[in-house]
Image 1 (cartoon, rainbow, N blue to C red):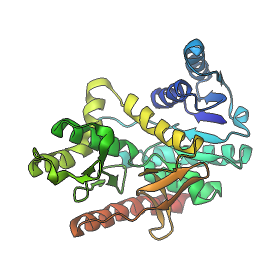
Image 2: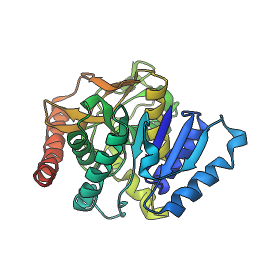
Image 3: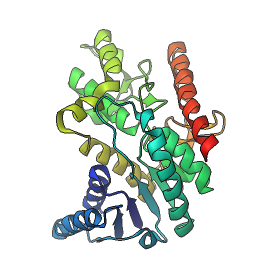
Image 4: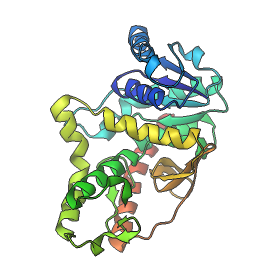
Length: 303
């Protein structure tokens, strides 16, 4: 398994490091507009080789990514604490379109994993310019948001976050939709807990949109949680685990990429699962999709 990373900034390097620790690839290639940056990150990871599964880790140019099985694209301008993800649109769209065409030409059988924001718009763009089937162009989507959601629920109710089945769907952004109506813990509906508080769930759901901004304001950017989230997707692909994850993929019905619970395995992402939602949640999801589509249409005019 060969995994290439386009972008060796904080997120790209952290994902590569986590992938190496988990032994997800026989070969990891790091690239970046700054060759020194990519070289330094690759060398830093390589020097810990004695403590994780054998992996060939090196830096390279775009041409060195040829015949990759998975290509992780995190290149782009990072978001500031007070900045909406969609404001990154014009700055990152041309970059992503150019990169996507180049890497897919070199690795026509690859799976793309999109990390660059605004995530759903960039995933839609990558799908359109790559010519790849939708199941092989995967955005990290709301996998990270869902992990945050479960973590806060677990802390509130003193349970293991891994036992919680709860999802956030829609946009990876301000219109994301935390699903409250169908949360379970080991298959048991959350309201059945003796210490259940409906108000607490509402507070968590309402506050989850600002979770990343809190970290950005404190330390300048999110790194570790996004890396774990991205590697969870990589693991599902590499090990063909058929895990259900709310990744962002192009949906023909909605004509845009959007995050929905989806089966992820060696051949990519799909199909989507239909989860029961309240009417309010369905309405919120429709608004979220419309918001994504608005920006996707803007990009389609340009590319």
